[in-house]
Length: 479
Image (cartoon, rainbow, N blue to C red; front, side):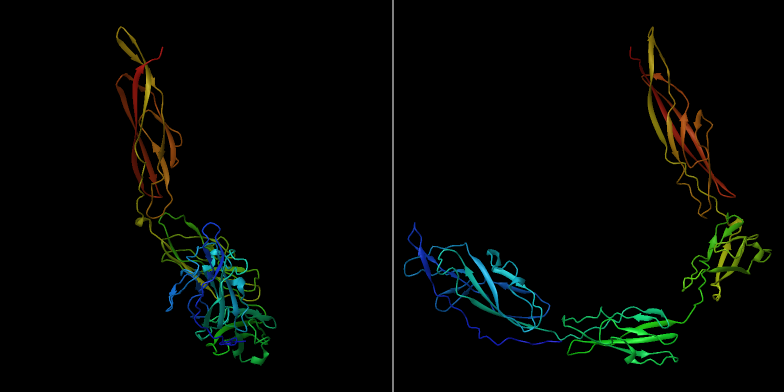
């Protein structure tokens, strides 16, 4: 049901002037206490969906010299100045709400507390909400609360047009139920929606009409197709005042088996160093019914001078067969897939094999230079120093930054003419162990080991060198 202006009987709202009232007197000063006063603020008009902010901290000066605000009046009483008290709570309550509203005082934030001088709530329907505010303390047990102050909140709608969302397309077999879903439809004003579904179009073979939709006035109707084809179903929604523009959803109904779809993969250019056998990939093919598929590859065209044909497949009935080529150029293949009853339309893919003359040389990168400083024990006789040799040093060398711009795979070969051992000379990353180095007392004996890295693709090589430096410093041996 749509409601726009359901209101409770109107309430005449008049300015409230608070008379000063005094309770018992303070035992120390003999001054009377000031009675609490309430001021609920100005009336408000907002749109549905907004939050109402209630503010009892506003101050209004009246012509008679009194002040409207929440807390305590400031005028002196006949018995002298008041002793001000600050331990009071703010109690808001709804005097009336629109007929269809379910809101109550529980929806007010911080109510009946010292912090509820600023409270809020969110209206749930349009209409007029009337609230009262009392300010209470515990000073005068006979009069603990102020007289009520009243504020009215008028909540209206923008009368925005609702929006229909008919949901995602559905595919079912003929005779099976197609479940539709319009629950994503909405009204910008938050109003309850009415639903109206209808059949926009049907296949020529169908005898269905809009009245054949089940639960057509709900968010989730159903349709049972009577023949194969595409059915278009429309949805419109209403907020009680306006109908939305229609939205449409397609229902595809199939009868029996569907043909599978072939996917021969992406066309690509292979690097000049590609082996004479490469692999095709048709595993992107699928069957809508989930049936097991059969594959059939064939050759469409080969470069001039090539002797390759369908016999160049290792097995053309595999999903990913291997094919052996013989000369550079473009090789085009087609794939069809079957489900035992139907064969798909063919899908075509082209592989381009580059000539070796187009091959680019790789680039070797033997890594950054490295160094180490170690000590050798030295002894003295007749002021002549004799030093032992420094022990071998282990260095890591890294050629992984070498690359080939064609994307060809690389081989690695480390070598050196110096007194050093390369532990894994054919690995991209390896260790080098230097030989012994002579030491000189006090001053270092520096020896550099040059390590060469050669990388190769199928036809070309490149070499880079990294230097490893050992500084052998002689020190007096500890007795």
